[in-house]
Image (tube, rainbow, N blue to C red; front, side, top):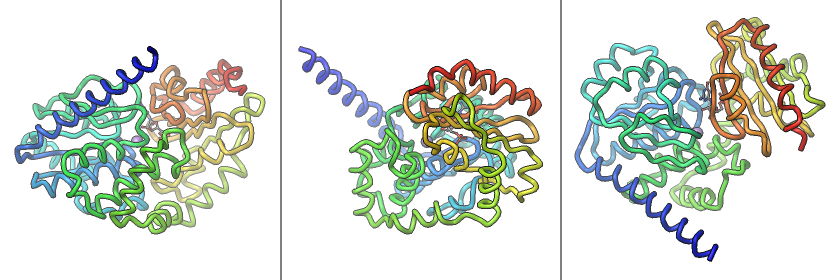
Amino acid sequence: LELIFSFRFILSSFANTIKKMKEIKDLLSLKSKILITTHVNPDGDAIGSSLALYNFLIKMGHDVTVVVPNDYPDFLKWMKSDDKIINFSEKTDYVKKLLNKIDIIFCLDFNNLKRINELGDLIQLSNSKKVLIDHHLNPDNFYDYKYHNVDASATAELVYDLISFIDENLIDKDISDCIYTGILTDTGSFRFASTSSKVHRIIAKLLDKGVRSDNIGKIIYESNSFDKLKLLGYSLSKKLEIICGGRAAYIVLTRKDLSDNNYKKGDTEGIVNYALSIAGVNMATLIIETKERIKFSFRSSGDFSVNHFANSYFNGGGHKNAAGGSLENKLSVALDKFLESMSKHTKELNY
Ligand code: 5GP
Ligand code: MN
């Protein structure tokens, strides 16, 4: 009986998935003016999923613009149509005018308009149809259409589902490169628990379209600047701390640390993973002092939910094993709050 019930559950969630994709396909049956946007500090999944969808919708004949809230690292600036991306923080007035003419807005890889600050306020006010495609926990209710699954490895996986449902023949090598990049980066190179057999089946199809995993791997992981690597070395040799009886590690980088190391956007990306890689450490945190606030990046392995932790103490969220948040305090106050919060959860990290 249990088997029948679970089978029925799988069938009904499958039917529901198809229904959601069909609704979005129908929405796209008329040629439209479309805006695609994604979260602040866009990462590989944000840019990969946005440009995959962009290139696909252009091939369908739509009039499309990708708008990012702010700049993103150079190692992501190579995918097809990257040169068409509009940076809201640089072209605010242009985007404000553009928004008046938009029919459909796709929100990719985030689920709360507060995550994109002023651009979010503008989208909230817009009369366009809003489509959410995302895999983060607890989506806010601001959309007209939603294709959302927390079990998806990346938003790029969901974009792949959707575009292959609409017209698989339109997926070319350029679009495949974008999807591949999103999944590669959001799965920690196909390592995280989210890397299902379905993910590998999608990757196989992308390779058949001509994607070169060696080339993309080189661009994403072997294009560090000298300064970025020196900052990593400094962070590990001078700033790495172990707490919670060896179960947690953290690194604090002050504004001075960053400027002393010629910090450029993207240079701190990946540092937190080194802290997590220590044997016995189940949770790692990177704390960065910026001009406006203290930014936290949390990572965990196993059961401890950093999404919950980020949400409880740091106005943030994300996924179970990768989340972020921020505090608008001085660094010393924020650090005290962090250490106090950690001490409350030390027991849970003992696995
Ligand atoms: P990262 O540590 O790489 O900045 O972010 C890790 C994950 O947490 C990402 O999936 C990101 O979307 C989410 N995240 C990062 N910062 C915040 C934040 O301030 N608020 C929320 N809700 N999510 C965040
Ligand atoms: Mn993502």
